[in-house]
Image (cartoon, rainbow over all chains, first blue to last red; front, side, top):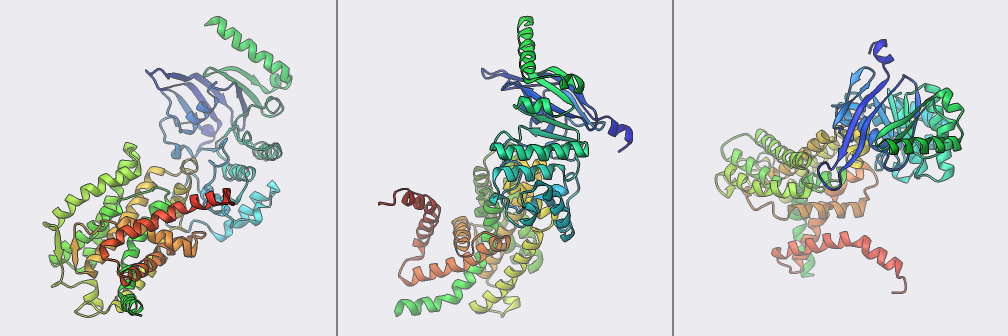
Length: 267
Length: 298
């Protein structure tokens, strides 16, 4: 990949998605979502329920096929690609801790699979002894002792532990784009705090381009380089780091209501 | 005493039979356990393997190429079920039923008639043992070597990059896609592999009994399932090695129970009822246990 292509970052343009078109349940989930992220930029996405945040992430990852619009990562147009092909560029952590790992496989087997994300798999051995050291040192900073449990099945882990493992799997090879879909929402407060701290250290230390959905306004203000607010399938507010730094939680709620009522007046 | 001596005489035959069915049992275990995808195609791919091998052997083809083509035919049957399931979004159970129904006609086409006898032809057993096909216990020895090789091969494969990926697809498809695995391709390959093993079992069975019949697949799936459940009850499915060995050990054991049932005076035609009841019992056991746990007073 050339330096120029790497410079391109992530460009999302005019995403449209309507679920159940032509039926009574017709739902326009994405109504022209556009934004772009510079390489290494960490953007936080907020918005009310049904605003289209998760649909947008699923559209970028490939789980949802968009009706219209383009997605480009590192200079490649990927909107026609199937999910597994996009996984060479994109990694993700899901809201549900059960979704990100294979429960019947061991910790090291899960890591070995993600260590080969985007690469061609063959009849070579699926897990080299030498990789274990690498896995141990990746797990150690979590402080959960998972580095001593490499041969344990993932089904034995708690939700917080599984989510932490998913995060390590997603960042073991730095992706071009990391998608985090409210990945701490299903965890108890202590586990959520732990996972958020691991997330920040992974994302900020290694300058990984990231889109993170959260419902936690304080998190949204405290972290990240960008703030995107979604409403009714569009990005209605896009704040850069310096504007975002001045915000308080109350400001954010007011801005949200302003934007929403403006749009209602206009429509 | 009479029952015991009857059973004693049946041990060698039941071991050999158990070893023949162990191939299909592995072929049934793979979709149910490794892919988490209940699949009934074995009822069609087992007689398909028997039909292809018998037809080719009766036409004078060598044993290895005949068994190789039987294996290939089974792989195609398994892949067809997977394609119906993945591309047309038909549940895997129904996809398998469609394929096994179609297989009935295909198997008659393959043989040109509903059954084929191999009594006057060479088989695996007449070549390796002696002209009458060998004694049951030597047949069991030959089959054990084949099964051991197969289990080792499977164990090796499931530790390769591709095998590990296949297990991840079976465990969690969302995770698999997010890790760059084409769930479509892995499911097709997995069911093709299972079909190949079921057909291999069929081709061995046709040579074991020197006879292939279009109806020989009836009930084979439940036998495979019973063997898997039985083996897991004894070995546990906690490691991959145990999971691979479970259907083999289970199949050997299952045919011991069959021999005991026969010595007790049950008719061969009663066996399907008994097997069905056993599988039902094994499936219902967790529910029964939890009922008792909730109402300890009863």
